Image (cartoon, rainbow over all chains, first blue to last red):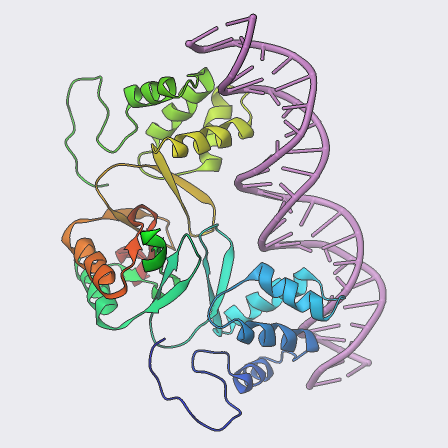
Length: 157
Length: 157
DNA sequence: ATAGATGCAAAACCTTTGCAATCGC
DNA sequence: GCGATTGCAAAGGTTTTGCATCTAT
């Protein structure tokens, strides 16, 4: 977890999570609608903090409202991505995994064995990206940077 | 394309490519068989140097032998991966992409716009991995490290 | 001869799409 | 009311699987 200004009044969620007002405002600005289904997807998104598979979101939404259909989830995710609120990467199995598009650039360490993920950022990442850019003139899309491997506990076993 | 020691005698392939004898030997050791189909997949693999999508391999194999079926390609790829001869990552769209499992650790810069890939290795990568390991005790699976972004020419446009 | 591989066909999986009905604005 | 959004159902693309047949060893 990267540090940031925490501890305001009860209402706002964790940093890095989807902010409610943003969604409503952005939708209105584009003459789009805030439907119950969209609320549900946003709610589900903010429950899994950090990384969610589209499938997980579908499951969660459907278990709450049996009439919920997958296509709505996918369409909503596309929309939220268009609005710049979330981004997606592909997980170890190639499935889409969504995350709030927060400002602080960070990458993810993902353990292939236990699936645990850990965010990294700061200098160790910045230095590396800087080198890549200087040397190859390549702009890394950091939010899509997933680093697979084995975490400490799984490495020993 | 990275430079490499080209131009030896006709027989041996480039470094980093699948070595023929290896496959035969490994198969024999396990009492597995060297079938024409397996030859074909290996041949196709070594034609795309570096990164191939399963679909590309299927296409290539089928265009050469119309009786070739996708399942054989997938089964062969699984086998080669078991044997440790290839590994796979997931490309920008989440599809499986295979590459020879060569010794020199390297990662890939993959341009989201034009799809070009570039291998990186050496110190800039080593330093970064070292930091990750020291700091998080995380063993990065380098062959699966795909770094998405925009290459020089696509960044300007 | 025999265990291992293939082809075939069907299914599983995830995601997208067209369209008529619905509902937020 | 109008137009955006949904549910439904079907299709799309990729990968997996079961089984009878075939073949490399």
